[in-house]
Length: 347
Image (tube, rainbow, N blue to C red; front, side, top):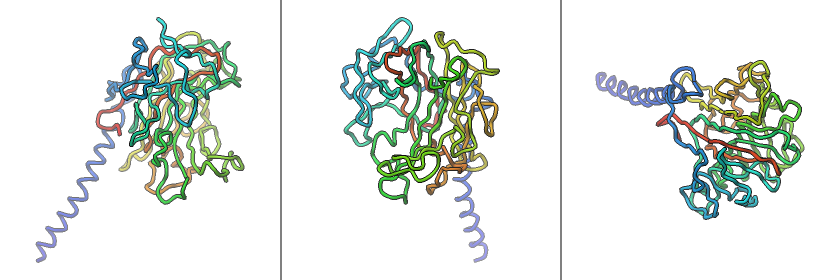
């Protein structure tokens, strides 16, 4: 009997340890294999999963069919007006967006609303990625009150409005989701050397009033962001090393690496920004001087992100649709957009 009990105990322990080892192995497999090189993501285990150099107009749903299979869509979430095809031009330089209205720097996206089970068509990326775009524009055309050039990601869980942004156990109507701004030309006081790289942890009940943080007393969602409000990070403005002047009328490569947090010995996730193949630099926080923001692996239960190390960890359970946009009458030229992910890690 004793031998049987010991054998049973060993079997039970083995059955528990195996999944833990498997999860730990996947955790290790889903991080860059060595120092990440934005000029060669494949060298650290990434594969190209999305690419558009805008030489083929058929990659964009210009006729607003709403069909699957396009890389970009003009139809927008949240009831925003469909982008007029006339604001989009294919040139030898690349795609040029010149909005004719103020659209919140949201003109085309890799996903669009749809009347199907998932609530959208197109592409959204989860489980970590490296996002990159080749861009240029003339700052002299930018009037910040009318919008600005932007390359950014947004939670499809929230946009699709299927309830996937509702944390278990929270009140009806409570939502929690991410906005990840890879590039925003919204730094009016430092436009020749800097750009915006904000990450927003949105939460709450939209139909109510925020009860905490810097949006306390404001209608709609609360927002924890990396501008020193609700987290230890104050690095939402990125620059080149030594504040080197940036001529935005010339091509620049904007990149962001997202490494999700994982359980078992490596709980921390992070995003890191790059410009022209080099790490971007920014403000205060654990990773200073790098433009890099981290978080603890998200817990199974909802945790208020305000002043919590779990702030931004909702990104790890979200999928990002990519958005390109600009401001009213502000031509924004995009040479390409690419996304790399580690095989077997994308969700």
